[in-house]
Amino acid sequence: MSWITVGHAFVVIYFLFSSLAKLVHYPYFVGQLPKTLVRPYSHLTAMIIIITELTLTIALIFHFYTHIMLVGLVMLVSIFTVYLIIMIQKGITKEDCGCYGGFLKERLDYQKVIKNILLITFLIVLLLQASAAVQLRDYGVATVGFVTYLFVHQLYQKLQQNQVKLAKIKSM
Image 1 (tube, one colour):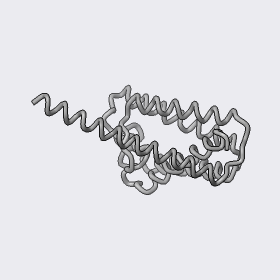
Image 2 (cartoon, one colour):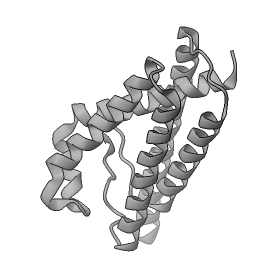
Image 3 (cartoon, helix red, strand yellow):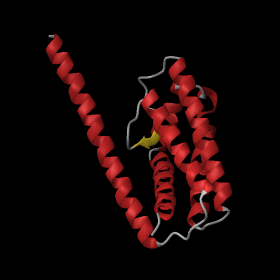
């Protein structure tokens, strides 16, 4: 099993989780959009984002034009990253980006921009590598990696919340 196959599986699981989380928490996701740039077209924008993510991910699962789908994901994450930078420049940093529906909360900040740049880099590396057949065990390994990422992310958020609470207590 190569890192390419595990990476491919990770990308599929990541974007499948992201799109399904937005779909499951659709009202929350749509509610986050008016707080940013796309106020008049929240529902349309939300559906386009969800359908695009799902389509690209399902095409990757079935190895349907894998290179083109990876290019599509690079473009999609690049658009999201530019959008994040615009929001940060406008001073909208306390809002949740809605990137994972209401499942995981992530603020609009440069930390999210860095994560997106790393994801874009990873997608480009996968794109430049030779195609490899992804097997079921690779999805298992990638799932474990993704669940670990979610756990670490939640732990990090809890630590940040505790630091804020501690700072408030110290200032009293």
